[in-house]
Length: 298
Length: 298
Image 1 (cartoon, rainbow over the protein chains, first blue to last red):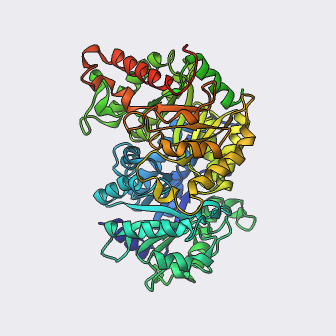
Image 2: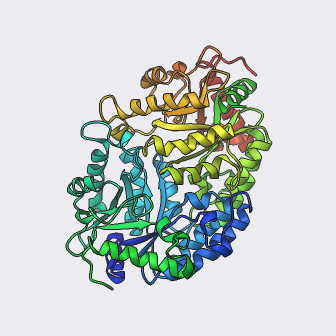
Image 3: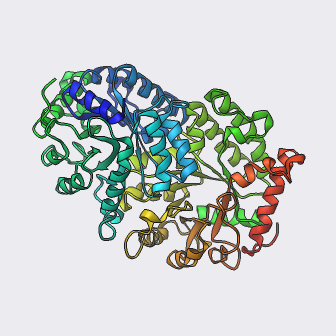
């Protein structure tokens, strides 16, 4: 089944478009696994991440449709970190979650093909359901990602307007702004990954930190699944995300990592143990998104 | 010592700005290690790459100042591939070569910091001397790379105008073209990584496939080291690269991968064995670059 259709089904099943961002920071892991920088080697840190994420994914899988591992926080620990990343992807899929690998990869054609094979085909790493892609190199450089995604029934989320405060420096360059030109290209490419749901697996990343622009990007990208990062820790709120969703609550997903993964550090949740704190933060997020995304409760 | 100064010294020592691009494609490895797609698993392919690259680096180290491993061709083979990448970086440094990790990474601030730590600090992977960076996310997203590079004495090569045929789609967007706006930002950032040589370790990637534009980018980037990919297999030639170099032959490096790594597949070199074919292709490239880069022969 096409990625867009799989994602719509998973969102319906869980009753929420909330996505678990998996950005393991050793100094913020719950107590048994927490390690300060410099206190432990890469191998030990990777072991801590593995133990923690196995339990985390079990807690998350019944509640959230997709997990978004951030490659950087695994690369940080070298080959043992990459083993931990492979294990996270494999375990999440076993538990029935979709996996969006957040690597923001991009390179010229033949190299882009190697990245697409690395993450979407399952030869080296367990195949992810979708990958984030940086479009700076142009259409011919995005082509191998599109081809592999079509072959594998996978999805892609192209960076259009990112969630960081300085995103506009280059993404607003020119008239129309570059991000709008990228959005138009993503819309064009989207026909190739169109699902029966009407949504396309050629998606776009639009920061949840700038709801004012969302309606404009939805206009340019009427069929693209949107990934709306920046919710929670980065200051994005549910308010203003409504234009991303259709009447059935489809069309966008909202990842959060720090606001969920570090919930045990919140004073109001600290007494409860990390598992309960995590689940409470997940429920808070699900409830906040329900105000803008009209999904029936699961 | 600052990266720019280390690179100038290494280029002087070898008498050439030629850089070995390390893009292992299993189906093009020399006979004992060659594997067709689907014929072998990731573990076996990674073993073949490891055995081959150990010998290749020994051959290259006396002749070439720097090696540029392409992360995609290692990620392709999952965790065993990443082990092979770590080994390539470590061995090249032992042999006295500089290492430029070609990962084209880029993400929002806190994630960019994790990528910079992964590749420049040596905690997870052996520390590279320099990293390629995708600037699409803006200055705040490039900041952690700049900070880590300054702390570690490392270099960065920001994508400005890439070597692929369709690079202009987004990189020529607006007026002035986006690539020129990125070049101006890289020039500004360059002060932070300035070496005693006068060159800055905040470098730029400008495709060798478009020599017509090189003089313009050199004007905008008077102190940036330039990485000029696309020589050889992608059609770039030495002709026209002269504006990249100063009177001492400093200021740019020229990577080649397929034209060197697949030399044993050339009919005119096939009879000689892969090691001799590789060295012959290296000498051809060194001689071709000597016509535009006025370095004394080593």
